[in-house]
Image 1 (cartoon, rainbow, N blue to C red):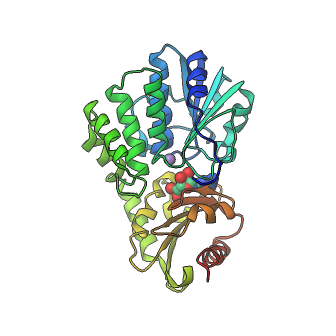
Image 2 (cartoon, helix red, strand yellow):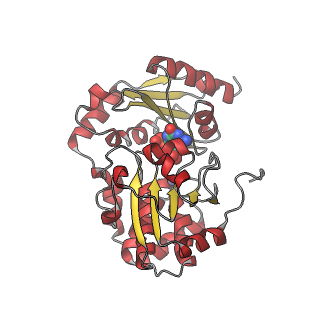
Image 3 (tube, rainbow, N blue to C red):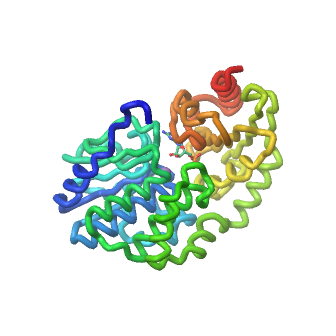
Length: 332
Ligand code: 5GP
Ligand code: MN
């Protein structure tokens, strides 16, 4: 990092706060992915083993664990946001800005101390203690370092929750963020006895039949805009509420994984309509287009190669605005 922001991780401040707190609430971002929830559960299980009163929650009203993540260990720690009691310490995992905390945003400011653990370059500075490292391939890798510093032994359950975050955010150890250190971390998790093949299947290769049918609809209406991104190509599709019927929003998270395979496009986008009718954009790039910056300019955030934002217009206008932003970024 050439810039001084985010500041260097405050490991000792975080460890001291974690050791001193008697009650801890861990919060993952709304519509949590495996890194957000896995990181929270792993640290939650570690803190519980130290005798602390631990809860994990997510600021989606009435939150319950989605089917796609219902195999993670430690789920007995999860409470809906309506049942949250302000603890000594709040820990926020994998969340770059307070609006991603949904209805729990105020719990963070209400707690005397709050630790933010994150790896988004677009982290915007909320919380009182920061463990932010944009070089880290996953928040789960930062959480494992904290667990080591707390001298909590790495058992199979904690290791499984860490693996879920690490494997997901590295795209099964394929993305550029994967280093030899990442693979050494993965080896430690294997040595802790994780059921890696079962976890990988549940994380990447297991979807309801109805979700595959919606994927089919989304793929069949995908559009390739070859002239976009200064001629390097954009592929995009949409998934409206009507398309997914009874399926939850989270069941559409994997559509981008198929769309982004398009050879002719540097950038892929999926526009997903939430239950409230608002459209969300998911962006992926392949080589040097920083979609994190583009998402930030559109009101969201994320990483260089994976980012997202919430729209303020109809989806047709979102497509136009995205193409404009991409052309500007690509120097067209
Ligand atoms: P996805 O496309 O899988 O939803 O998200 C990709 C990345 O962008 C994730 O790291 C996620 O945290 C980030 N992201 C997605 N949506 C938003 C958003 O609305 N705001 C911010 N700040 N980041 C987002
Ligand atoms: Mn993450």
